[in-house]
Amino acid sequence: MTRGQRWVFFGAVLLVLLVALPVGAQSTRIAPPGGLPKSGTKSCATSAAALVASATPVLSVALRNSSSTISVVLGNSTAQDFTLLPGASISFDIADLAKIYCKTTSSTATLEYFAVQGP
Image (tube, rainbow, N blue to C red):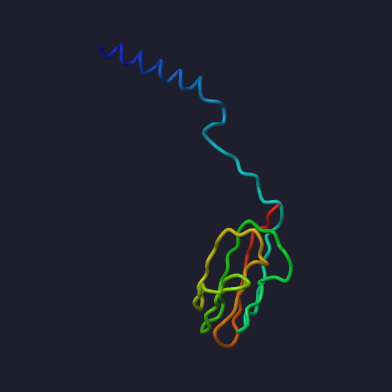
């Protein structure tokens, strides 16, 4: 195959690909969140308590332990196993803020949260 034949072949393949691919196949648009951001604080003590009192649909949340000396332990209603050290933060996807529980091993600490509300 000569150089000119290769260019013709390459052009034909490119044309087939452009015609065969549907418009918009290269990207996906995700709908924006349905609500306003939600933020607040939770005073965590030695007994586990929900981050918020009632169901609060969200897409994701960022949490920060604003204490300079006390660790906060995160989890669900039955087990809190993830330790958030003083000053540390974490973010993750979750469907409901009321499913997050916090406690401390001693004293109290403030947990700050910022969430993107869902539809």
